[in-house]
Length: 46
Image 1 (cartoon, rainbow, N blue to C red):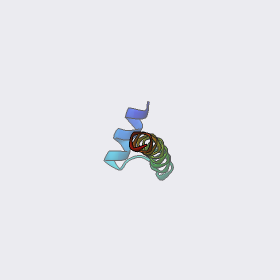
Image 2: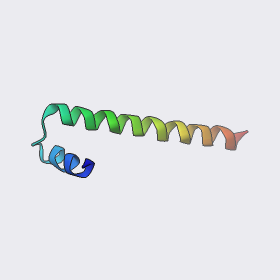
Image 3: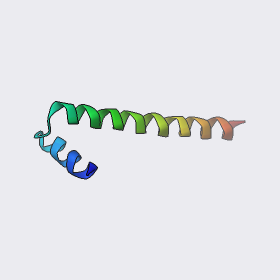
Image 4: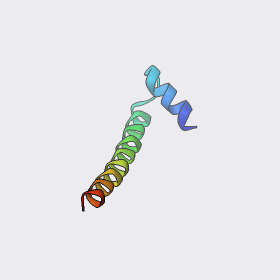
């Protein structure tokens, strides 16, 4: 389902609401990965 929405968003045919939703999901994923990287970096330097 997510792949279909992503494909639609890439083609620009998805409604703005769906694109915004994909952006929120991407932001959340970025936040989580960034935090994990930050924790890993902090723990490795200690």
